[in-house]
Image (cartoon, rainbow, N blue to C red):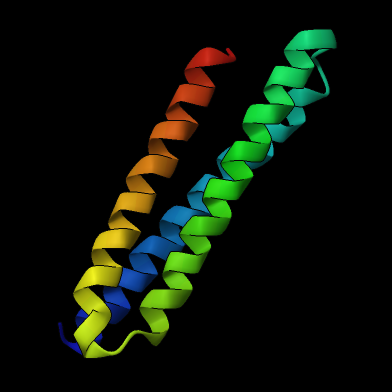
Length: 97
């Protein structure tokens, strides 16, 4: 993959991460409205989302520093992490309306 394609891919992931951060900010504010078991479950799932977000950030960092020989593997891992994080956000939003 050319350097410009790699840069575009990384910028796309960074933009998506910014969108996810905005979703997570809204999700975190909602926790203040809950009480008891609902709040505990909400916060547990929110912590899981934070961990997935850290993984996604690591994939961006790995993509930036990867050599050509590992680029495709890291790109595939990053895409997989992104799908998982997106699915988790969507599940979270639908489960805690």
